Amino acid sequence: MTERYQSRIEVFCQAEGIDIPSGFYRHSATRLAAIDLDSEPPKLIAKTWFRKEDVAYYLTHLSAGRQLRILDFKDRRELIFNGASSFAVGSEF
Image 1 (cartoon, rainbow, N blue to C red):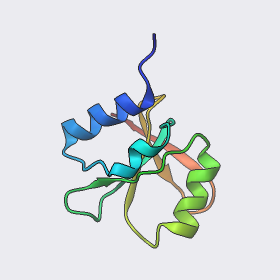
Image 2 (cartoon, rainbow, N blue to C red):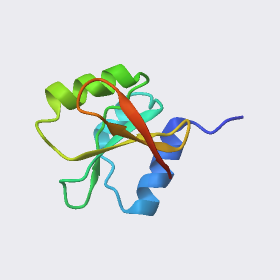
Image 3 (cartoon, rainbow, N blue to C red):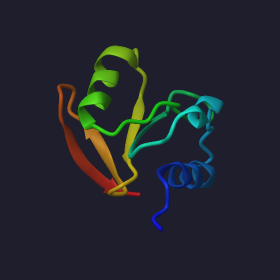
Image 4 (cartoon, helix red, strand yellow):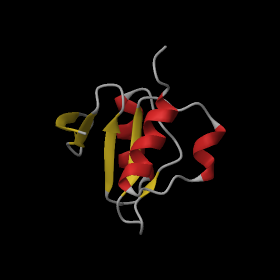
């Protein structure tokens, strides 16, 4: 049986010292997650996404200029937002 995204995200956040908000557990987690790097300690955004287009919308309309790290927990790669509507593939994590 494959590991659920929620478990993958939890393990990653605990290992990296990233705070997990209680809202994260209200819905099933999907493959794309964002980490708010402007928080101290860094904090997981409670919402996760399945589509990159939805993440791009969040980044352009709802993130209010925050510095976020986008992670794809299916491919285990960081995604780098180009400021428009697409992403470049970053390093593995």
